[in-house]
Image 1 (cartoon, rainbow, N blue to C red):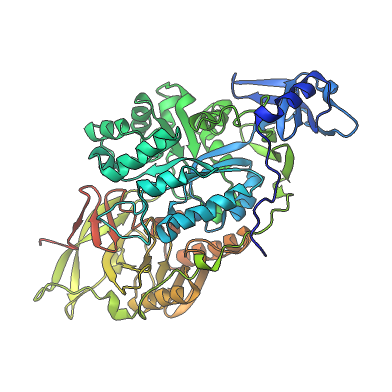
Image 2: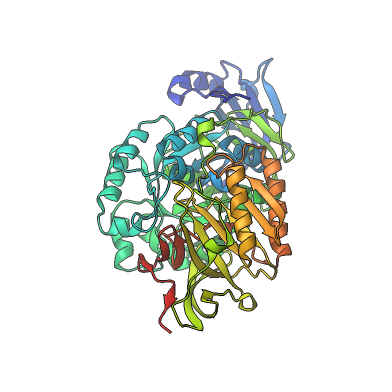
Length: 606
């Protein structure tokens, strides 16, 4: 296989083909494709208009009306919608491809049958490993796709300077350089909200560069404090936010002129609570956007992508057309692309879905740029695999062979027990709780407490090969057997996280990932239960999405076998080092109190 740079013909700008569109609309030239007898879901007017024909030429819509017979020629392809709904292709307003553990190409192959035709991706995961070069690799791959994949320049690499070290650093100069690339749509989520509030030079410089370029600044305000810090953050420039978890969060953002992005990912269930801002509080839905943020490959294959989010929003009582607007037109408007996509109207890219039932969003056919890519839930398009260069692989550098002793936590001298900080997992949400527990000491080493669901978490530095291991405690996984789960996906700095109840298993899991070049592995009593190899930056597989989904499903099954009942527990595992979301995390520098944004001691005063 070889890297492909242009698998599909790119549509010409509206300005270039406008005379052709006029000729087709007027009947002077035939369309390439005419979809007849559809029920047009018009997201501009909020109507469903029966008996509509859509004429398409050069990948764009030329005519929407009651009869496109005048646009039909001998070579025009005809599709009879048979009274089914014509829905704009769905847009994901904020997401990370790497969370699917596959490349951009494989992610597209997985989501196209589910109706996603536009994505706005923030590749800050690969940026934390490979820097600007990693962003460029994903940018170039995105441009080769048959659907629209726009890229945001990562804003926080590392996510919280002073609280962690990543494999690379990006600043205003790198951001300004990337803003000149052809497929860059704006600045990725600004996670360092204290930096914005304090007018940090790096944050202010990156935001200013983006504003000067006339592009959108993505937001990430993870604090529940809606007082002065929130107002300072909004004043700093971020235009949207997906970190809300309550109705009041969505209300506050929209009132301040932001777009509230409501996410339903594999482990984030934030739509139901926040959509009440519309369904119960009566806010104008135009400034609400649906997104996924992080979707596991197994979730996509088994449950769907943006269609899953839209269905979920409808199930919460939202009008179906309003839910579709939040996943199409609203998103396009937010990124300044209303004249390019987000609706089935003249001049726009011919991204449309033929849907047999609106509330359940039963998608029969998927078209992008006037070409049918999927039918009946199956991909029809032949999208070539995309190879990453060798320099994007072999990024896991442990510096030494890890042993069980590396996970020993020395207790203060002369103590029989200690009071320790414990990271508390919160199911279906990104925040954690800052817990405390009294733990026994055995031979000078602090022991875990499996009976009370307290096991060990360790972070192993994997970018520079320093051999550093940071140890702590975590609660919420419910492991009941000797086991360990290791992962080189550890948002956002992506060191290696190991969570386990048995130190020998933890060491075996860590060393296994060092050998395979990254991924996720579950080990129990010396036996490897599941392995997902992720050789690209230790984050993504070079295998097909279906293969990765199957391995990911085996991983989930192994976690359940060990006693874990959390919904999408692996996603929770991968976020335990995310030092920009409260309350307590682990980094390569130690235990981090994200509420106070400082490193703290593992032990508390007794």
